[in-house]
Image (cartoon, rainbow, N blue to C red):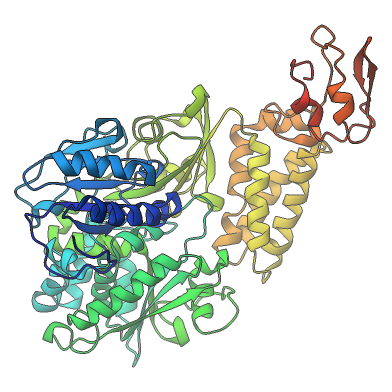
Length: 614
């Protein structure tokens, strides 16, 4: 048995069985370290021979810990939701006989003889519900390779795009190819990537910078983190190609410090790429040199904005600058700077190797390629999906996401996080692309996809996102600093039952004003969740304001507790548990709740075993 290692560098014997464990944040959160330890111990105990490997997130986060067992020439078996208590049986039965433990099996796949590394040539889980309709271009390596082993990335075609660029293409030819592909920035508004690179390339300077924005701050978003944890070399390769195209001399990864595993793997990736000659001085003997560093951000949402990010790298407070000049002309330290996000860079090697024409065949007329979304909220299959642009919301929610758990009804999906909007059931068949989402009142953003069911109060959801934006505002411009706070106050009053008729009109007006007057994207997009809920769920605002009720019973301040006489058994459990003695009654009298004294703590409801409190 080989030693447990996160940096598996030795050449592996194809005839030795392999055990691959998902060690991304989702896997670690589900207990992957314990499973890894248990595998090591059981192999020794049972005197079995196997190579133990680690990998990143394959996207099926709801089923972690995932463990693959591969016997040469046999089916590859994936076990889902593996616990340490399951390991002894899996290794004893599967390791001893080669036959899978069926009750733990999640998927089985036959080996692909055409792959570079047979035991690592994992085909897509086409037979699994979550993967039907997906096209895994950007996620092609995530969950299939050891992200800390540069050899596995190279074996699957890694750095061939960089070699092609440096040896056969001029910087202009690279930009032309990216422009022709139709690739748009995957981090926000979808600005054409080739156009940005061309704008930066035309400015001459003694120093130029290429930046990777990995400051993923949307609630419910984890696409960038998963890419950096699962396939960091692809992102780095795309970033180096971008640096060559714009004549950059240095580069920075700006990563949230809350992503310690991503930071750790990036550091190792940069080190390994430098050793192999893919980074540093005279890359691959081409004469082009580039050094790339890592800057850990403190977690400010506003630092996802390009100029605030640059201020942070410079050691200043993370606040946006007024523009013009644009960053491509005077960005980091007033030098020409090109910034793209993690997913955008990960597309670049793929485009260079496959060609712009091939890439542009996927997607819609104005939104080419695929997009990664993180599925969270009230959905069965939480995790990552990569779909062609133009895929409908319904396909993602019900075909890949598995629908709503507990037989609840779909109500809305918040696309784009605090910058996006809530889209209702009537728009389930809307295609997902940049223009369609904006028209519907949302935006692509980084790709968070939060599903809510019929138990969710949309007014409270809008208040939640506005609270986030108000807290994350840097305070530089009054429309954002003051406006988001005022909107939060109004939304809070409405959820407390103190809303007024004029509030909806005031909120609508403030949405338009803050969007137009704010300095940066945070303030400009902050009203989107409010504006979309006013547009599609106005009846819930009316119920809160006019009727002083929350249709979903989410807003505690609007709860009204009553005793159903025919159900009351006069057991006095509610009376004994009321902390403010707001309930009266006896063993011969039905309990009565004094609504003036009631503090709505919900204890009477919880303690009544006869469903007499409603």
